Image (cartoon, rainbow, N blue to C red; front, side, top):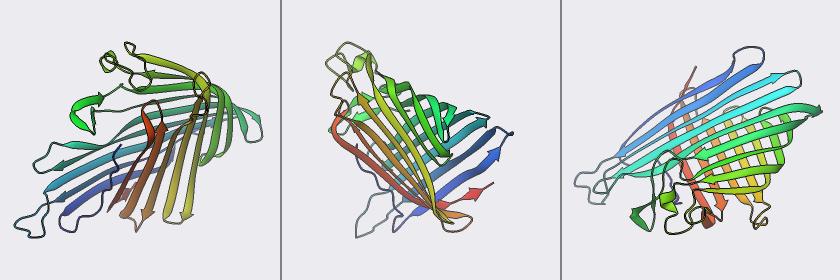
Length: 282
C-alpha cells in the first residue's frame, strides 16, 4: 500500500465539509453517535516557473456507533466506511483510500466489567485496486478480498470509550473471486478456489481518549492468530483517528493505519491522511 499524505497546497483552493453527530439517546437502552467528513483539495498552475501539476483530491469517511445496554446485556456496533481519490493532470484517476468495515459485539455480564461475548467483524472495499508495480493489472475489487471473523470469548468493557474483546475460538473466512486464483494463490486463497477457512484467536481493542477539551484520539486495534497455519504470524490492523478542533467550525483530522497480513503482503502496509477543514456540529 502506498503512503498517502494530504496537506494544504501552497497554491490552490481547499474546500472541506464535515458533520459530526453528538451522542444521541434514542431511548433508555440505545445510544447512537457518528461522524461524517468530506475533504477536498484543488491546485492549479499557469505559467508557474517553479513547476507544478494541476490536481484534484477528494476524501470522504463515515464512522458511526450504535450501542445497546440493558440489565446484564450490552451490544456494541460500529460502522466504518471511507473512500478517497486523487486526479493529477495528464494521469488516470487513482484512489487513495477504500474501506468498508462492520463490527458487532454482544455481551452478557459475567462479573464486574467482564462479559461473556460473541462477536462478528466484516471487512472489504468498494472499488477496484490496481497493482502498484503494473497499474494495468487489477488485484482486488468489492468482495475480493472480503474478510469475515466470528467467535466466542470474553469482553472487558470499562465504558463505550475503553473496551477489549478476547476471543480464543474465532473462525475466519477470506473470500475472493475465482478469477483472482486462476493462475495462483491470492490473499491466501489457494489456486482455483474462492474461499479460505482459518481458526484461531482474536483480540479487538478500542480506546478513545480526550487529551484536552478540543483534542480527541481514537485507537482501534485488531489482532488475529491462525492456529491451523503459522500461528506465530499474527495479523495486525491498527488505526488512529485524531481530531483537533480549532474552534466550533474548524478542525484538523489525522488518520494513520498500519496492516500486517502475510497472506496479502510480506511486510507492513501503512497509510495516513491529514486534513484541515470546516466542522459543523448538530
